[in-house]
Amino acid sequence: MKRIGITGSLASGKSTAGKILGRKGPVFSADNVVKKLYSQKKFKKYVSKKLKIANSSNLKILIKKKILKDKSFFKKLEKIIHPLVRKEMTNFIKKHKNKKFTFFEIPLLVESRLMKKFDIILFIKAKRSLRMKRFKQKGGNKVFFNILNAKQLSDKNKTKHCDYVVVNEKNLDILKKNLLDILKRYE
Image (tube, rainbow, N blue to C red):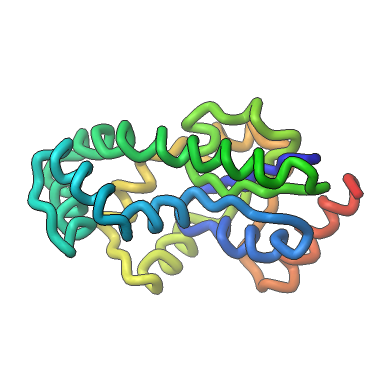
């Protein structure tokens, strides 16, 4: 089994790359695991208690407001979420151990020092201005983009730990071709 990590900066196209590569094997998405966690009452209750905020249906909005006021709040949140995501990742690996390829879409792969867990790491790259535009199109705003973007290493530092850099600034056909060309080397 080849474990292929997919990383990149905020709104670079990691999820799109994951969907394209998903035709070749199962995809683990750290973002989807987090979304699933937020849909669970038990998780919401736990997070509310740990972070000392009201448990409501708008928990994510309350958390965003806290982060905007105090950027160190993000670290507290990560200490809760990251171990749960890693546990799900371990379960995913066990479940798909007989697959030829497994893909792992992990925004903070390098920042979390997970490089040794993967045989190949792909870095999805796009200009900051394009990433900002994509982020806003999904309902985000400039302030929150800047906060989240600052949590990540620069592209230059991240790419040092990656095997391939795939530029995602044109169209889906080019992205698909580039990704599948890389994968052909390992088939």
